[in-house]
Each structure stands twice: as C-alpha cells, then as structure tokens.
Length: 71
Image 1 (spheres, rainbow, N blue to C red):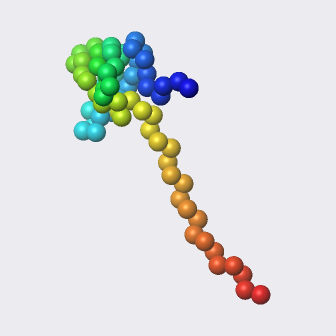
Image 2: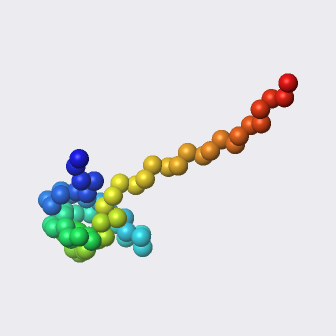
C-alpha cells in the first residue's frame, strides 16, 4: 500500500488552517511534517502532515427514516 503523502521532490499546494496557501516542492519529510520549498517569492515553510492529506469526501446527508406503512 502506498503512502497518502507526497514524496520529496513532488510539487504540492497546501492550504494551512490560518488560510495561507503554500505552493512548492517537498524537500524532506519527518515524523510530524514536511519542509515545503516555496515557489517564486514564497518563503519555505514546515507544514504539518495533516495538511498534506487529500481533503475528505463530503459526508452524505442521511435520509430520515420513514415509518413503515400501516396496513
């Protein structure tokens, strides 16, 4: 099974919890996060691994249970 995280050298676009968006290449990954080398004028930053995971699929709304028809 392959890792859900990108590998060093791969390009990523990450939106942090504070709303900042970072685009760049992964330089290295440690146990808690990854160092992303910013593209262009962006600064390089360490980002937590959770921010590199794909966004979860939206949860389907549950259909309310309909009572069984009375006979």
